[in-house]
Image (cartoon, rainbow, N blue to C red; front, top):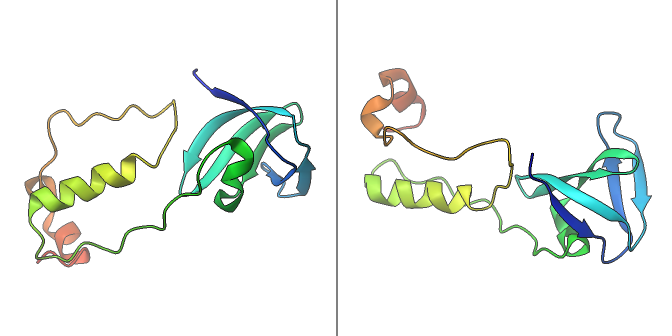
Amino acid sequence: MSYEPVVLKRDVEAIQIPYGQKTKLPKGSPVEITQELGGSFTVLTDLGLMRIEGKNADALGREAAQPLAEPVPAHTDAKAVATEIWNQLKTCYDPEIPVNFDPPWTQSMMSDAAKLQLGMM
């Protein structure tokens, strides 16, 4: 596994996984970013796994995540949808999830029920 080691730039509040108890990690603590999804971070510490909210990304030397994009209108062309998907994927970091689309994904791979649910029909 490939984790990203960082040293905390300031004290930061974290939530223990899976217990949900809040704790403070002190400035200078070494952590490893194991996952970055949805604007929050999962880090491995000497105390175990912790979740750090995206608003505290600066403590990890990162910028806060951009707000999630608005849903793409159903009448948007496939190229715009693909561009937005890639933009969102660029905000995720998880070394255990390989990102490849082989064969390349197209809307024709969706069931009619999925298209209906997403307002594409």
